[in-house]
Structure formats: C-alpha cells, structure tokens
Image (cartoon, rainbow, N blue to C red):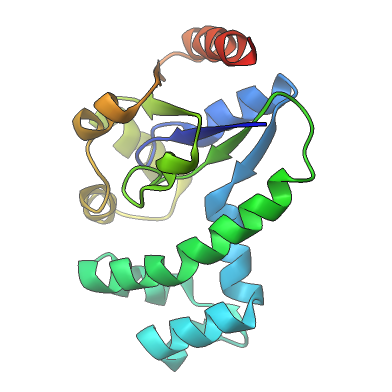
Length: 192
C-alpha cells in the first residue's frame, strides 16, 4: 500500500484537502491529532515531556497546550527535543494504523512532513500552498490567536519555496472548486 504524505504550512488548508481525499474513499491519518492523543495518553511520552518542559506541561492529567506552545514556539531547541519525543511515537502508531487500512494508498497529513524528514517514508508527497496573507486570515478566523503568534509559528516551519522541490504534487488552495479539481487529478494519478 502506498503512503502519500500531505503537508503545508499553518493555514494552507491541509485539513480541507485531507477531507477531500476522504470523500474520495481514501483513508487519512492526521498526524497532529494522533500526536496530541499520544501526548495525553502514552505514559512514556508524558514522562519524557514532563522531564523536558516541567510539571506544568499537564494540568489534571491533560496536556497544557498553551503552556507548551509558549515554550516551544519561542525556543527552537526545545521544539526539536519535543519533536524527538513525539515523532517516533507517531511513526509507530501510523505503521499500526496503516496495517489495518484498505485501498491503493493512504494519506498521512503532517504539518512538518519535510522538516522532520518523515517524507522519506512516503511514496508521494503533496504540498498544499496558499498565499501567506490568506493563511494568516484563515488562522485568525479559526483560532483564538494573534497575528504575531501565527507569524512565530510560521517561522518554525519551512517556507513553501523550500518544500516545492521535495513535493511530487502541489495543490494551490485559494478557491475551493479549483482545489477539488486538483485533488481529483492527484487522486487519479496516484491510483494508477
């Protein structure tokens, strides 16, 4: 079974594109959601996070996301160390999940597919791209955050120009109808 990595910067529309693949009958693994589950439920992961970031990482047994985000998006070395804890756990979970799926291929949606080199385990990669200002406006509508926080998060991700050469397909997500057509074309090509 082929693995298709789906990525894009914050606000690019990865989730929208992932839903379009699901509507075509493709199984989609959302790495960020599964990472959050593992960070909340896997005792080994929890212990390592507390050792790295302190006891305030969890409140009443639940991941303290604002606390962690404040640390890691302002200290790139802590972000790298957190990723070194979480990403191997997610990779193992993905392998188990994939073994239970059917179809020609599965999609693994991951915000930092290229940055953490997990694209190397993919048969194809898809980059979802949108203009920076469009992305900022989407995130401002979606999340309770500030422009400065969004820009800080963007600065911790590679720019699209760095991702283009590593991408087998690029989906430009500005207009929903055009995006749907692009997803369908990519699906047809991968399904061959």
